[in-house]
Length: 209
Ligand code: ADP
Ligand code: MG
Image (cartoon, rainbow, N blue to C red; front, side, top):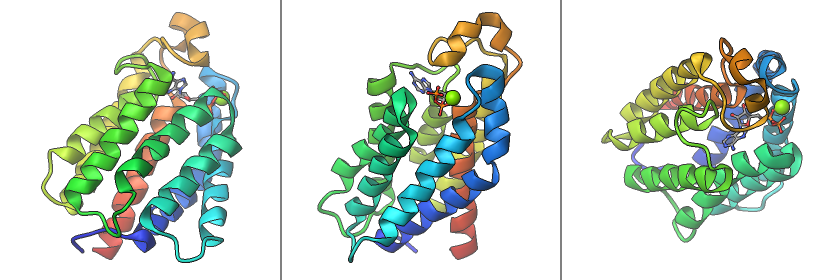
C-alpha cells in the first residue's frame, strides 16, 4: 500500500488503543514510580474514547480521524499531559486537512508537525525525561526512510530506544521533576506510551502490508 487514507488512520488508532489497553497496568506502575500512577488508566481511556468517537463519524475524512483522536486525548486525559498528547494529533490535523490520502512524505509532515506541537505546548527537549525522548527520535527515524514499511519499523525501534534512554535521566518536566535524582532508574511512562504507539502501528502495518 503506497498511501494511507481514513480507514487506515482509524485502524492505526484502533491498534494503538488495543495495545495501550493491554499495557495499562504496566504504564500505571511506571507512573507510580515517577508521578501519580494514573498514566496507563488515562491514556487507555482516552484512546478508547477516540475509537468510539471515530466509530460514530459518518464517512470521515482523513483529518476527521486525527481530529477525533486529538479531542479524545485532550478531553479524556485532561490536565497538562492531555493537552500535550492531544497536540501531537491536533497539529497533524492541519497538515492532513484537504488530503484524501497520505503518501510517505505527507506522513513525515504529519508526524513532524505533531512533534513540534508537543514541544511548543510542553517545552520539553530531548533529555528532559518525557515522551519527547521517544517521539523526537521516532519522528526523525521515520523521516529518514523512503517508505512506510521501513518508516514504521525504524520509528518503532527508535521510540523503544528513546524510552529506554529515559531510565537514567533526571526529569526536568512534568510531575517527575519533583523527584529529582530519586526518579533515576525508572522509565518515563509517557515515553513508554510513545514506544507502544509506534510498535502497535508497525505490527499493524506488517500484518497488513
Ligand atoms: P499527569 O502527569 O498529569 O498525571 P500522565 O501521568 O498521564 O499525566 O502523563 C505523564 C507523562 O506526560 C510523563 O511521563 C511525560 O512523558 C509526559 N509529560 C509531562 N510533562 C511533559 C512536558 N512538559 N512535555 C512533554 N511530555 C510531558
Ligand atoms: Mg500521572
